Image (spheres, one colour):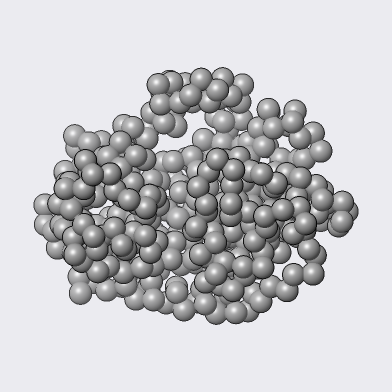
Length: 365
């Protein structure tokens, strides 16, 4: 059986790259010949262009992008190298005009994980919903995310049509399960993000040792109320340095006491998590890899001007680590007891359930 996976493998985003690697690797380890379909979505290609794609970015984003052009170029190259060197890509790169020719190459198609079911991410590119696949028996998803809690009225009928073509449906969030039920009347499976399909030992093979120790790691997405100040308070209490993943040239001016750079590779990202003494984050994948590597973590789940990070909070609830949630600087407590043995037991059970599902759909059961 030959398996084709379609996802956001070209996004310059640590979570996107790592879930791509994990899903392709996990299915391959089950004994199936698996490729990541090298699909080039025009909207997403423009979104990650270093030069161009100005209309899809704000004025501030364009200015910041110009200032950080060189480190951004290094980062993009490192992401491309990681995917090309560590995943099996289809020998042909497809676009929207040629993707239909992939029908004859694969026995099973899987879309996911990531927000492949979020119309806004791809400008509603229906190829991520496997609309190009002629035989509906081949159409499946794994831990696909809608990224939103409701589908706008104007898209609902098209979503219903697309989702009803799936042979097997698996989503990442309970909200996605509800959306599928409301639009199609179908029940669907709920599975963990692909990064949990590999354990710490397997991730360690890809991780690059940072060559430093005694540090607090910051990994934040969007704006934060307290993360920077929380890390400073934690550093004062512990005497450790602070490393900020993704710190660009503007961040360095704002936070001269933090180390880090924008061009951190995927392998370096993993290594920084593996060897961190503490992690302060508001990111789901930051939370995920902290749990995978049993790191002492502090997670901000409520962010000013941004929606609540339900994914990170739900992960902490699932693994029994909700004491790691922070809301104010007063939550800087060094005495939190984190039961990582329980967390790993839960993740192991979730992993087995997910692998059973993947084994079944890849065998056309």
